[in-house]
Structure formats: C-alpha cells, structure tokens
Image (cartoon, rainbow, N blue to C red; front, side, top):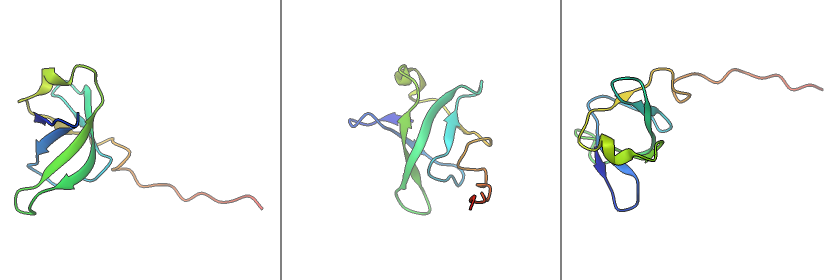
Length: 82
C-alpha cells in the first residue's frame, strides 16, 4: 500500500476486487474503501479512500478484501407501495 499525494492509498491487487469494496487489516479493522480500479489488467491497482485517521500505520502492509462488504452483497429487490 502506498499513500498518494491526493490522500488516497494505492494498492497492488492480488485478486479481483470491485469498486466500493472494503479493505481490512489482518485483524479485521476497516482500513480503506476501493474507489476505482486503475492500471493494466494483468497487474491491476486500486485507488482507495482511507477509513482511518492513522492510515500511515498501514503503509507497506498487506490488506485484505472484506467479504461482508456492501459491494459484495446483492441488493434486494424492493417493492414500491402503490
């Protein structure tokens, strides 16, 4: 993970992620939210917004995709009341 001048973090991906996915540390602490996927398809990166004020603590460390992230869950169909 690298801290960009914009305040976002840039993460080299080892598996496919989607925009809006939450990234956590090894303990499950929410670290960042994926905002966009960038770079070549063979070696993708993600630009993510920090979810912690102490993001510098995570620079150079591995982060993991949170499988319970809202981006991973399907939206339920909602009926409109008439």
